Length: 232
Image 1 (cartoon, rainbow, N blue to C red):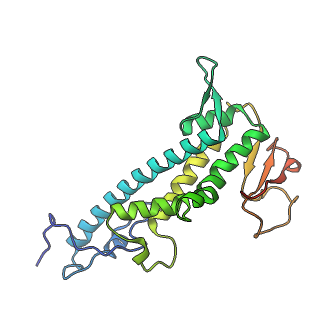
Image 2 (cartoon, rainbow, N blue to C red):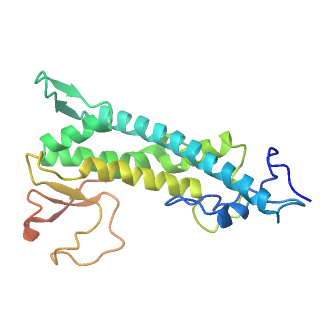
Image 3 (cartoon, rainbow, N blue to C red):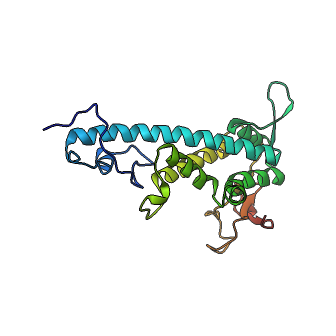
């Protein structure tokens, strides 16, 4: 007896439905199969195709939500950049503009804007207006609703693959914006993580969420310092 490949196999939505960091294997996808034909290779292959498509659609949704988040955050923070063609100062409306703003201005004021955008707006500020949810949690619920699954009903021992994919894409956005090349006019840097290349700070795993590490010369290990501002 064989399964009809044109028929969508019964599915069990799992927290690890797809691999957020790399290509989902056939074995992982097959865990979502249920029903009388769940042991058949053809069923596993059909589920594998469906899971890959689901991940592609989820990735597209998350990217759109992150673009909107960065657009709103840059607008609120008043982040601007200088247009290379006209020399005019323009508001940042996308991640490319934000990267230009960072490349052109390494001042402490601009680093504060970036820290607020990437480490504070989507978490602490977002929880004030989205029913106590961070932006990642809110996007996760939106995606699960579109997939007609309720994240609250999943037997979650850790974050779902949807939230893991959100975190990966958000980190990719941030890494791309902060990456250094020869076009930079400064050597400034701001991190939420404690710098590993210096022994200036004692390890503190309970430091506040508004504490960051900044330097105006990333080449000099002694220039790193800790900064913070009152909680909102």
